[in-house]
Image 1 (cartoon, helix red, strand yellow):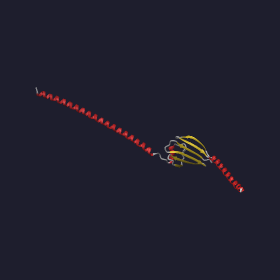
Image 2 (cartoon, helix red, strand yellow):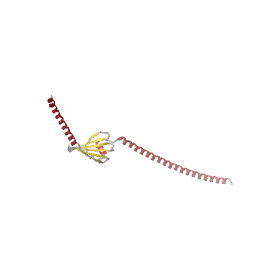
Image 3 (spheres, one colour):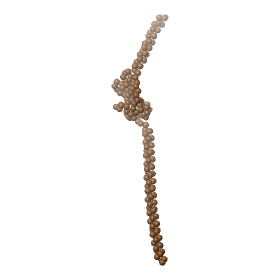
Image 4 (tube, one colour):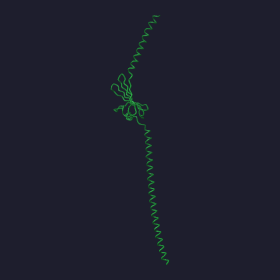
Length: 188
């Protein structure tokens, strides 16, 4: 009976030993596959992180801090083939075929290449505001023109009234003189 237990236990221990050795090898391999990462500031208020795996795959991720359309761009180079993936602010990802250097281009150019449209509600709101300012400016201009014409018309009416009054006054004076002469002639 003890021989049977020993015969059964020896292969079991050997299997466990192989399993542990395999697990250690897996840990060593996963450590070797981990990439060394470097991070540097990028243009357009972004940050570029670069990693290179042991198999030679290079991954460059540009993260935008305050772009309204995109959050990041990932360029993966594997066996000389580049793949560009753009991620929008909402999380939508698109693979982009572009000759643009997406790691140094503006965020808006990258978003345009990916086909991510700008937020139209902001554009529409600012356009409405601009049109309201234009309309207000035109209203003021028209009001000024109407006021100026009213003043000009008032001056013209006033001038004509003064002229008319002068004519009436001189005609009245002239009439009075004639009437006075006529009275003198009647009364000796």
